[in-house]
Length: 349
Image 1 (cartoon, rainbow, N blue to C red):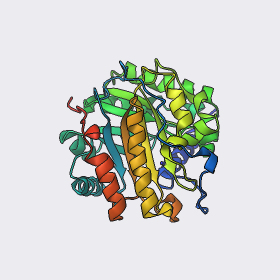
Image 2: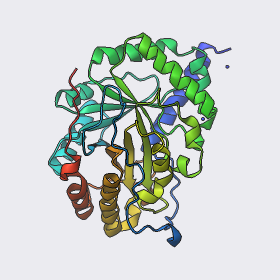
Image 3: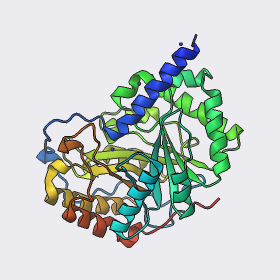
């Protein structure tokens, strides 16, 4: 809706912590407090047109569509199993009457990349986006995880299909600061990991840099940017959760940032509108989101966060649209069935 001489025991603890941090994607780590409306002074009369670059783009193996935008999603399965993932995505697509161009999936730092469900998604024509948690940045650059990173790189190379690799997304979140240390440390780790992938010949990944909209609002996100020579897609996660705003209001600082990097296509890695805002307002928000994406043609991929995380049960953290017919209808007509979002990626090896 979306921060050490190291013994084997300590490394195990660090990996366990990384695993726990990854699970916050299902929690969204946004406090379940009463929602507040955006100040009236921030209300806009129409979607902002800021990120207007139409290329040419330098995006790596997964290039943007020539026109329009890819549409994708994370769909939380009822059961976190391989068959459960396939079933959840299949039902979602049947509900929308189309396939997703991009299928988002989350991985702990120590977790293997490619599972049976991923192979099924790739075989039917969708591109996989691996949202990979990463590890403590200073331990990474100290070389403590070199073999783990090399194993992931070799696995990706063997997979063969072009993928989107969203390395340590939302790195700007306050609860990750102890693990990220600083923007400088994060950038060093990014470069270190990417260099290992190059050494292993795992060149079939487009690297996606994806902070939060809040990180651009408070000014912290830009310090984590590794540079145009390191990043293939720029990205943001944006939600109308405990605080309401149009998507254009919420991500305006991000749009201003990416407008300064016109050779990089933009992805909305996660977006969602919380259940707390009610059917009518949620439907209007989704229609406005589509208009905002179209007004900013540098945006070439958008992925919905179709999930009601189980550990944050309040409606300010619930983003599922498929169980509300009117909201689902707005999503279907403004996004899923709109020709602008019809492009499909080429995931063939």
